[in-house]
Amino acid sequence: MGTELCSVTSPTGGLERLVQGWASVLGAHYDVVLIDMRPEEGAPGAIDGIPVVAVETVGELEGTLRRIGADVVQTNNRCLWDTGSALRVNTFHNYPQGWSTTGASGDLHRLKGAVSSQITTTVSRSLATQVESMFALEEGQVQVTYPFVAQVFLDERWHGGAGILFPSRLLMKKGPDQVLEAARLLGLEDRVTFLDFVTPFLRNSEEYLGIRQRIDASRASLVGQVARAVELAALYASADLVVAVATEPEGMGLVALEAQGVGTPIVSAGPGGLLEATLDPNEHLDRFDPEALAAGIERALAAGGGGTTKGAIAEQFSLEASAAGLEAAFAAR
Image (cartoon, rainbow, N blue to C red):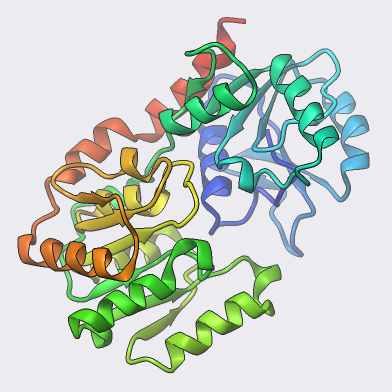
């Protein structure tokens, strides 16, 4: 199990946490190995008893996979690994913008060939529909493997806090500027907290630094990136509203699911899987301009509540159910 897009041993990334969780459950029934592409210094050699094999370049993959001799190779987002005779199962977590393709016809042609010769799953029904349309697959051919919400987010110890939390990465496509402007319109700028979260290689980018500068110039707060799930759960619980926005399609929206698992109300906006990730009575907005966001935030704060989603999240998005969905995709073969 692995992906060529990132190291799977990171404790903070959503894709990484999903792969680690699936491996831990499947490891009770199968001999599972995690392939760790370009691991950071000090990366573990095993996670929850699952061995981790470090690979520095895509060129090393073929020999590594041959030595492992796997019957099934599960990849994530990119599905161009040469897996030999092994059955390949690829899970798309993001829309095409997140697949790291050049958009060139040759690159997409290779992806289409790979998709046609493998089992494909996605993390939401909306993303499955997109993949089926893009690669001319039959309706229902792409299976849905919903993500899971870790148990720590579902603990009963979490209780409501105060303030508005924006815990998504500080990227333009996540809508931090729209949220900041919406708070200004409501006169609630000083109640907003942003999480200083961005992919490490983007920390010196103009995009990230510009967002940081605008937050620093406002009356909003900024807290440091958290490294553990329990810290993130506590952060969700410290707010009385979590805002999850995307200007580009989201595969599902793990922030929305985790916040609702804690019991914190959310308001979401944007295309893709965020609609599926937003459970009643929380509201998903069709628009994500500041005026629409301000109105949605105002309604959510007035309504209060949110704890009613905890049970639904626990039932629909458990680790066991998610891993069983992935296993079902390949076990029948």
